[in-house]
Image (cartoon, rainbow, N blue to C red; front, side):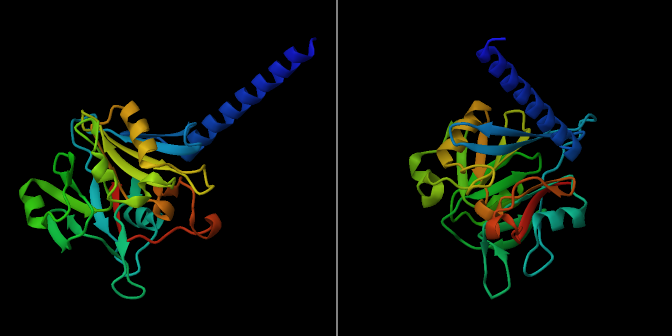
Length: 270
């Protein structure tokens, strides 16, 4: 057999074996549910792996699959995995950026509304994510008061970074420049929505764990390819955590990939 044909056959067998193992691994993790699916993908341009979690807007009986918001019941916060296991969540994600008003105490930034109740109303330079009763996602400008957000129909709200896509188009450059680290590669957590109100979470690696990381431009490029109508940047870096059926599927980042970061609040599906 010619040498080049032998090499081609060997490479093909390796690729087929790797593909089978990757598929088998995802099945063992249980990365599907009645109303959601999770797949792990690789973006060549950013040299980064990412998880794409798709949550149906409604179940087979026509009921809305509610995206919910909750705060930790511990002053120091808890990991997303701890929260998900405590609450028996199908899916759980990190949410807001945090502040530390006192040593050992973690609180989320900005405006916080949980199930129609104003928990916190602090003005910041960040945009606010609102979640309406039908799961529609909307971004509110910095400085918008919690009462105005409630009046607009949002029953949950939190503050992280800001929108990347609105009305199917990338936001203005001036909005992207509010946060300087948007142009730097980092692990990222983004919530997005399709026209039919299905919700997507894009959770990418970075800093050498599952890849180099992504910039805002990378995220917009991928999400536009998925035809999302809206996308908002949640907290990222070592906070990036996606938990499926009680298991953390994203890479730990802090302390050389050995520690899950404590968070003050969460988005989840029960």
